[in-house]
Image (cartoon, rainbow, N blue to C red; front, side):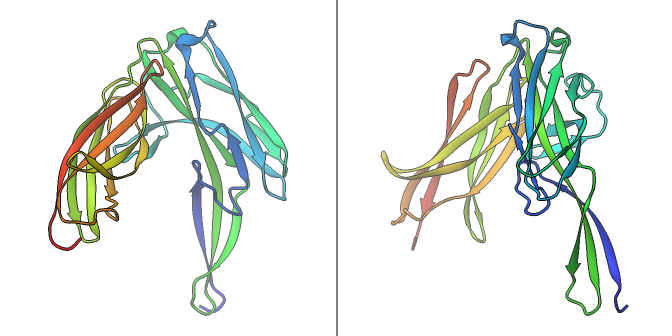
Length: 277
């Protein structure tokens, strides 16, 4: 086994994550959102920019793919789809392959035509920028004479959304509970997206005793696909709860509706602290 090497093939999905040494590329904007109802023409043209950060020139290819968002807020990629809201076959872009060098930008122009033929609600696709030539890295395994070679392919995804026709963005908190785990207390909240377009939310949790605000902290934000739900579990920040007693936890969620108007929804749960805090 001396001198033996194992080859490991890996695909590194860098959807918005900085990946040192390998994801030597930056893309802006990180998402494209279009409201077709505000356009005068039956098509839309926009662009994204790809910037090379590697000292060596890098070759990239561009291609689309459909995706959904599951109840964990994760992007689920789909190779083929019959979903009428899939923009994969409708989106056009140039160039489809290019080389970038350090400090230089490459613009990728995007066009979507026949907007009037799109179904009502949210239409989407993911535009992938993927390096053509995989990178190799030798990894020691800790065993004498045995190593591993990791082949890494970087892929960055830019979601493209087009809202058209009768669009509805409506969120609701179905439940907001407090659950106990070995490492502390957690909030358990289910957020519904009741419309036909995604809801991007942010929020906070307030800790009250009676009518007094004891503390508040940020709630992890996320995206809930239209007609879907998201289960948010987050550890409760109890550092400012100094005494035992009855407390109220209030979740305050904010999002923008289909008209861009800010909406707030709230849900409360009771927290009883006994003994030493």
